[in-house]
Image 1 (cartoon, helix red, strand yellow):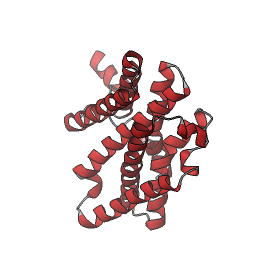
Image 2 (cartoon, rainbow, N blue to C red; image 1 turned 45 degrees about the vertical axis):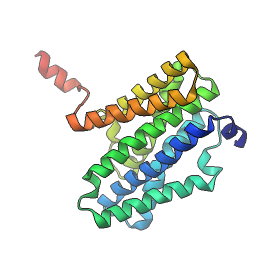
Image 3 (cartoon, one colour; image 1 turned 180 degrees about the horizontal axis):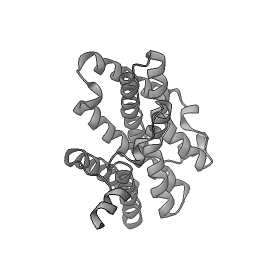
Length: 217
């Protein structure tokens, strides 16, 4: 409800939420463009990527999703979709361009942070903060992959959801120590985007059962 929104630390939440909406709408729309969806389909996937994680967060915490309360949410996401279409026109292989990869990392960090902020404001446990931060961060991308008829890449592709987990842990620890939401938000975002960019550049992956089996045989 609107009272729920008013209870949030306004500056860090508003900034991170706007960044996340634009970045993830861009990433989701870029995925749809790669699959040759028409402009309506591109918009649907872009909006789904931007909103699904936050909507899941709000349902878990018994809140009305913010996307249903403010047109500004829709406007930010549509900006991301427009940027994706423009990038496809201007760039070769826009889905693999560093701009898109960086936007994905930024969106992941922004939504991990907003998830942690909302969870902490509601008063859930430390585990709840980390869980909600992770769900908020990866839920949109996972839902977009379902729309694109493929297994959610967060379950197998690379070191992705783990970055949001680290960000959530950073928020919980910082908020517990200094009780400053702005400092906790900054550290959460920095930890998430930093580990994600390092993971991309260095090709980090979590081990699979198959790899562990081959190593120990």
